[in-house]
Each structure stands twice: as structure tokens, then as C-alpha cells.
Image (cartoon, rainbow, N blue to C red; front, top):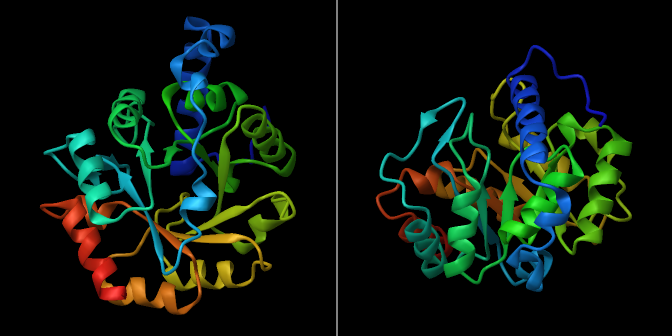
Amino acid sequence: MSTVDVKGTILGRIVEDTEALTRQRKRERSLSSLLSEPGFGRTPASLASALSGDGLSVIAEVKKASPSKGVIREDFHPVRIADSYRSGGAAALSVLTEPLHFQGSPDFLRAIRAEVDLPLLRKDFILDPYQVAEARAWGADAILLIAACLDRAHLAELQAAADEWGLETLVEVYDPRELDRVDLDTSRIIGANSRDLRTFEVDLDRAIGTLGALPAGILRVAESGLSSQADFARVRDAGIEAVLVGESFMRAPDPGAALHAILEYLS
């Protein structure tokens, strides 16, 4: 596999750990056995369709921890949180499966899939087509692909694997120059992360500007760094179709109620 050089950064450490974990999983379980999992027996839902409604759509994130903030929510019950988000009006859910830096787990995705019918995005550092098959096997409908750690050919390879296994992709960029790695003719959903995964610094204006430069016809998602009502209103007023939000909701006593309050404010 070919990844962009991110050595010496937080992202670089995560990539190295993910590569090692994926090698271990591939030794423990063959690709053919993954393809026999129940997740391959269901038809994935369309994330793009879920984000195409009127107003600002929200991908609400089920997230316990992060490298920059540590544990975000001690009282962490993934299915209960997912149900709360569904009641609060989420268009889709993002579920962290990265275990070492975000305390995520495939079990969270499987458990939520069994109880919630919203489109599910596997949020992880996808570097290998094997991980794409894992996502489908565990019940995901879409995967996140992070351009900061993928070159153009590698990104295209992973998108092709997603197409093969019936999953949609949300391609994430931070720096506008990373758009050079993205085939804009075949990428239907693109997100701009306000948080630089190399330094974890946040700049919402940069994300809004990056999304504003995309051609028509692409669903745009503002990711990370949104907390106040004013932040959500700025994104909506910029004409962006969706947001992906985790931390601000996860810190609320009732994440779904916090989401509902934002949607009410924006209506």
C-alpha cells in the first residue's frame, strides 16, 4: 500500500498502528471468511441520499475518546447513544472503530447496526481494501477515506474496493491542496475537516472555504470543530449540505437532545 509521508505527526503514529493492526487481523481472518458475514447479506443504505434532504443534515458521531482530548464520555453506551441520536433527528451515524487512539471498536458498529436503521459510516483510518470488506461485514453503509494519509492512486484503489462491495465513501480533506488527490468526477461526498490531523489544531473558516471551492453536484460535509449554534448557522449559511459532529454532542448529558436543539435552532 502507498501512503503519504506523515512520519513524526500524530496522524503518522495512528497510520503506523493501523497498518500493524490490519496486518494482524488479516493473519487472524481471511478475506473469504469476511465475505460470509451477515453484513454482506444486507443491502447497504445510501449515505448520499440521507444527506440530500432539505436543511442542514447531521451525521452524528458515536465517539468515546480522541488523541487530543482523551476520554470524552465516561458513561459510554454506544447503542443507547445511537438511539438518542436517531430520536434527535440524525440523518446518519458515524461510528469510531479505531481502538488504540479513539477507544473505538468493531463491536460498537455491529451492536448499533443490529438496533438502528440509519446509514452507518465506519470512522477509522482506512488504508487497505481488507478494511473496506471489514466495514461491510460489520454492517457499515459507508466508509471514511482520509486524503491526508493517502496518495491519489491509493485513494482511488480504496474507492474502487468500496464500489465493489457496495459501500459509499466520504472523502475527507483538511488542506485544499489535498483535493488534487481526489477524483472529483467520481467522489460524490467530500468532507473538510476543521481539525488538522497532523497537529489537531482547529480552523472552521478553512473548512468552509475548502468546501465552497468544490464544483456543483458534490455533497459537502463540514467535519469537526462545530460546537456553538453560531458555528452550525455559519455552515448552513455557506450553503453546505451536512456536518459531521461528535465531541460537542458527546459531552452533552443527552446527545440526541443536544442534536435536536441544534436542528430546532436552525429550522
